[in-house]
Image (cartoon, rainbow, N blue to C red; front, side, top):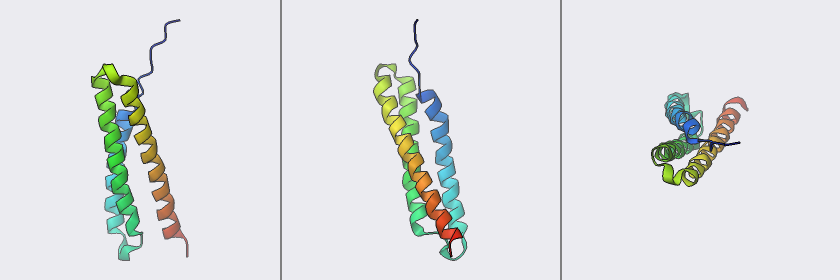
Length: 102
């Protein structure tokens, strides 16, 4: 059976680029919070997170355009995407605990 290699980049590219927008939106919302109710670390971490997603987006696009190094570049894009998602979950817990705990 002839198996085509799965092109993971075609899945990472749209999601990672959307996550850049989500990070920027959440940074804007955090800035609107009254009296610095949310930690100043949250917006800094989300800025770093948006850079991780942007790098993942660019690597995904690069691997789609240049098939010669597809596997290696896809692996880097995938790892950066997972790091970005883990950081976003961490920031979500940080914000949730700061807002909803007494």
